[in-house]
Every structure is written in structure tokens, then in C-alpha cells.
Amino acid sequence: MNQPDLGLRVTELRLQKGLTQEQLAEECEVSPRTIQRIESGEVDPRTYTLQCLSNSLDFNFLMDNSSNENLWLAILHLSSIFCNIIIPLLLWSWKKNQSHKIDKQGRQVLNFQITMTLALFAALFLLMLAPMVLVMMGEANVSAMEGSPIFMLLVICLPMPLIMIGIFCTWQGIRNTMRALSDKPILYLLSIPFIK
Image (cartoon, rainbow, N blue to C red):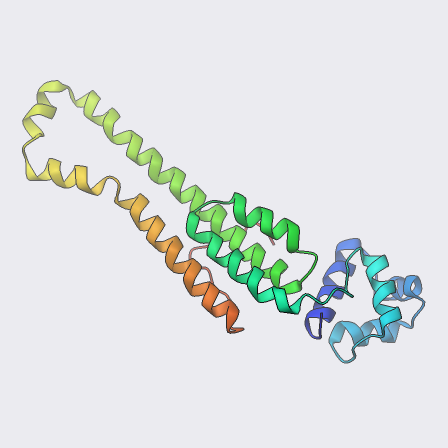
């Protein structure tokens, strides 16, 4: 892992563990200024320091995964096409400790998937609500409406939210895969940040 990702990851993991820079420096037997310089991206730490940071923060900084990082980012973003939260959750859980980019973008994919799952449930609820309304209208009213253009339009438009969610997920997955592979910022529209 290279700077600035390394520094960002050290800062994030240190804060997650509730350590100050001084406490982490003491654990790693380096000066607090060294930790500050690593976190700000000013220096690339020595192998010994990386090993100490790995042990203190429970993260393997020595593993060079930059060659596979783009592959996993592409798989992670393309998994959003399936409108399924399980695939990105498994990928993110498995790879989040190996790359800051995978961790950060994985959270964005998961937030998008959770949001789209909630939208799918809302659309399915509306789709199930329509037959109940027809039953409540009574057989006579339904048979009178069957031939009307409004009834046909209603039947055609009922599954439309499900189709639109599928198209939107596909578009967002492909768009953000291309953005991730070209090192542009990732943006999932209509995503609620459940996972920070």
C-alpha cells in the first residue's frame, strides 16, 4: 500500500482502536512525529515500522495488493447490478482490510445496495397492494373496467418501478466501475449513508 492511502488507513484504524498518535508511537517504538508524518503522507515508513503498525492495528500493511485492487473494485461495483446486498457485503467483508480504496468504495456500494433494497421492497409492496384494491372494488366494478384504456395502462405501469430500479442499478454499477478504474470519485446517486 502506498501513500496517501497508507496514511489515511493508519489514521482510520488508529481512531477505530481509540488510540492517540502518541499511544500508537509508543506501541511501535517510534516517535509521535513519525506517526504524524506517516498519517499525513509525508513519508513512506520503513519495513520494520510497517510491521509494527500491522501488529498494533491488526491490518496487513506489508501485503502489496495494488495489482489486484482494480479487479476487486470492478467486481465490487459491478455486483451492484444484481440489486443484491449479499454479494457486495461478502466482497467488502473479505477485502476491506487489504485496501483503503476497497474499504471506502465498498461502503459506498453497500449504502447504495441497502437503499435500492428498501426501494425494491417499497415497489413490491405497491405491486401487491394493487390486487387488494381490485378485490375491494368488487367483481362488478372490475369487470366493467377491464376493457378500458385506463385499466390497461394501470396493468402495464404496475411493474414499472421494479424495471426502473433494475435499470438504475445497472447504470450506477457500470458508471461507477468505469469511474473507479480511472481513479475518478465514486458517486452513487440516491444512496443513503447507512454505513459510515
